[in-house]
Image 1 (cartoon, helix red, strand yellow):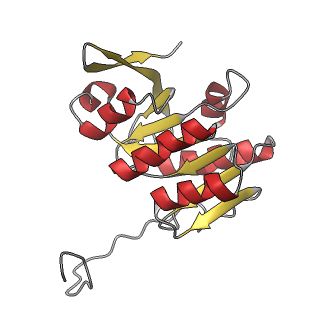
Image 2 (tube, one colour):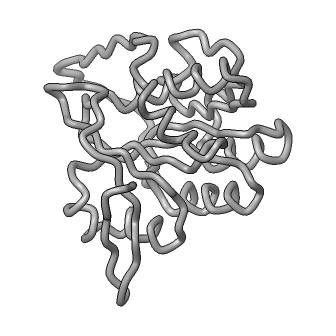
Length: 197
């Protein structure tokens, strides 16, 4: 109604996703993020059912355990809603861009974690975090580095230098497994993803 979804009817099927924790699944990613002694902005890229949310949940829990102040912005209750996020501040139900801004202003986090980066407002909120000295760990739907070079949102993030580390996941067959770590580089107005050292 008025361009917005108001109700759903004539439902023909249901998709039930059961979240679960896999403690320690993000240990290698966390070590990579903390290589310089402090968390760096990290984007986890993978197709549906590749384990992005499970990985982010474990990143948040691990960073909190290591003494970092972690805020989880959980718009749809997929990150912190179903599983306890001990040691993290969880903003449940906040639109991501608003939750990120509120966390920076009110909660003094070292790291903000959120799932499914999806639009320009969220990208701008990530850039604002960088200016405020707050690290961001987020996820993005995607398949491989080469395919991102033609998409506006990832290229815009690369041009803003929004993320220092891009971690690509294997896919549905191997959920949560990182196949490669990359950094984005802009040359002659084109974006390239190069293997991270």
